[in-house]
Image: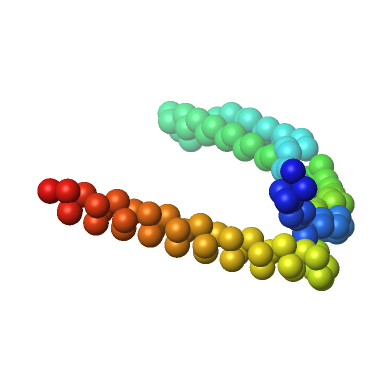
Length: 122
């Protein structure tokens, strides 16, 4: 079993702080007070009576309840940092590449041999 070995990942995650700032403004308009003037007046000229109706509504609006929220979030985000491969790790990667090439070549030769054998048998 000493011939079987595996590679370890070369990427290490280092936490990096990211800061996100969010500002929110809330403004609301509210009616502060209401003034209603309602009046009825009558004017008599000779035998004619004229009736006047007045109705005034004043709404005083004030801009109140202004709210300012400032949020700052610090989030740790893993950031990949690669390191230099050691000589042994580079050798394992190189040998693994050659082994995959040899195995795929052998498989192609085997498939070719089977096809030639089937054609000759017919």
